[in-house]
Length: 114
Length: 130
Image (cartoon, rainbow over all chains, first blue to last red; front, side, top):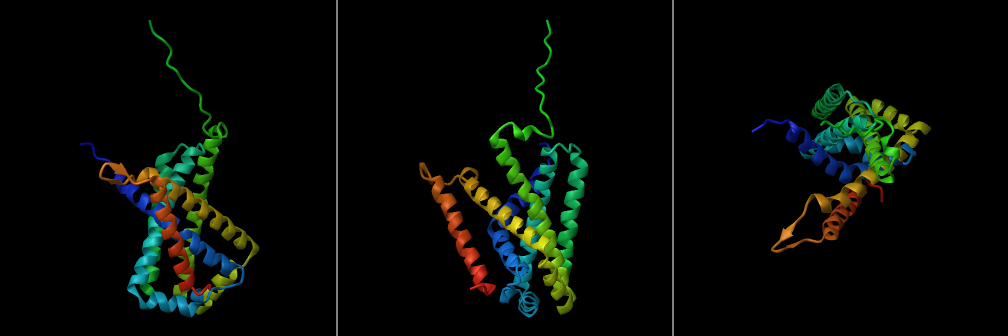
């Protein structure tokens, strides 16, 4: 059977697409409110720090949402680059996937430090 | 007897103007630029939160620039577009068979919308918006 790395790339992409669909609109709405100067009470330093520092589950959820969204976005950006005529797929894929992994690791370390 | 192979010329950078369907496809592709950039912004927000109250206050203050507000509006619209198109596609991607029949597509997509609405309201309530 031919070996393919497609499932490894594709599964987090599909999971990330679902996670983005369910979570990113409401998170974007919350930070939009913050940007408009109406910071929701759950996004103050004390509330957010308290929530994340006190709960391993909350850290895992935030990490899961961020990592899957980053990977899915990287995969879709790769396709977008190709569709816009940037036909250097190996380079684009390498750069984007490494960026997603680095950002995910950074998120994990930051959450661990909270 | 040999024939020349058929080579269909496809302009690599402007093919999507040929059909409205291609344009809709590309407009959905573009949402990934905003969502990807937004995820990176969230990681920076996490770094500010880990840094302490002062860096976090500076991060929230930086969010309130006009450029940031425009970016957040664009991300919100892109995320809504991604979510609705994603949920509309679920009925094609995940067929559910019960006995001889398939569950109607509208039920599968509708269930996703209901879960999405409840989840969003719960998160908004949890964040103290109401």
